[in-house]
Image (cartoon, rainbow, N blue to C red; front, side):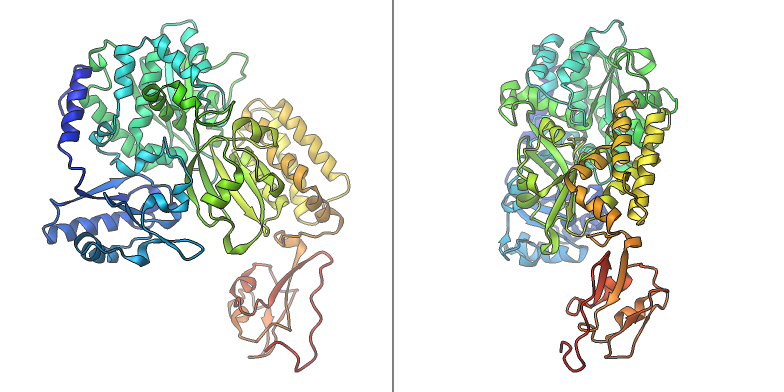
Length: 635
């Protein structure tokens, strides 16, 4: 790679890269993100390369190993261009058939296509409802880019925004454009990036830092990881632009230890930037110097908080600091430091290239642009989705997510991760933006979205998230440390059937104290799962306390397992699989559970054939149907 000494050199290189590429050449973009790798996508890629070499087709077909395409549960995902044929759940043994039937024969393999609930097949990626209803501005380039090849990013106008800033705009003009776009931080707080940049730029001191927060710790969330894995240059370009606007000459990327692929791809991207002269001294001959260091965090959830993250960069314990002095004034080593998350930085090149007016035309009045969500839980289509701010929860869950699995009834959706809140069915038409979610008692967070069905116990959900937060609290301040512990204690009592009158009022009192008095955002938002579930599902809490009943049959202490003699055909599946031998019965005769031996492991319920559904879970005052007279049982 030759070092680029000017913007003219960059544009010349870009033209050479584009000219050398044949837009009509067959390309197979194969997802190589962490999710698809778990489904053996690397073996699929190796099989394609070997088969193409064997058939002397390697010069006619290009294999592009890309980052995450988003439709993670359908992986490995591959798309054949220029036809845009999308194949899902591809296996190494499918490779020869794909080459024979599709690449050589021009035929589509129907069994590898997406099939909708109505049985209709979709050939093109853009026609699949999961993709069709999205607006992938930040995440969309993932499917075209090999993250280990900077030329792929340059071919898609990569680093053009940086070149524009360095040669056509003053730092003040760059800052003003980002501020005018009203780009709000995608890490959870939603603070306007332009205001944060200005505070850091105007802070006293010559040495300033810019930081990428890639410490993504929410259960089920992996948006930032997938961006870093699949398109690291979009984040890096945004970071260099931010550094130029703020007047920083050193940046940090704080990334979780658990993200090895993201770190590897990020390392390669930084090496290629330095070789091209897009990082280091005198970038593109502009006189601007900037370097980046990667700092790997140890996996503490609290280190995602700004001051705790900066303490960790300094080599100290990742604990939050009092905010009477903001990190924009005194951050890393006491210097003014600007922190934004991965997705926020990746939006910056788009704003510079297309303008603030373009950006503000997307979204709602207070929340502009798009947002990437991790859609998981009891929904048919799970994965990463990017939608304009203001799209309703209903559209995300039912149009993109394809509705609830198994035809079950929707119950609630948790947004904002463990510190977010639950939103009930009657609020499904709520527009998804920073302000609407906060008003509903939840939050945007980094973008986690967990869908729950009728079999979910809301008390158990609150307990689950409080267990996570109790483990992750640094313990520095009493309100968070003790408040979360005491809320969790009460929730455990309620789930164990030991709840007492007055517990809900006490729970609310502790939650309010924790929210108002904690040092950092972890403690301040920790009560959200409790307060929101109490607000929308209070009757469910009351049933746990008053009737010792868990309507969803989740809380083991409140559940009893029975076998309905009217439905049991004596197949023996439950008896054979019971780990403690609590089930007895003769072949072709109704079986019985010894409740004194039963450990409530749920095995019998899971293995009972659906055509019988004889194993029943009862709670509270629920009663098993009376046995039918002999000879009148179901046949």
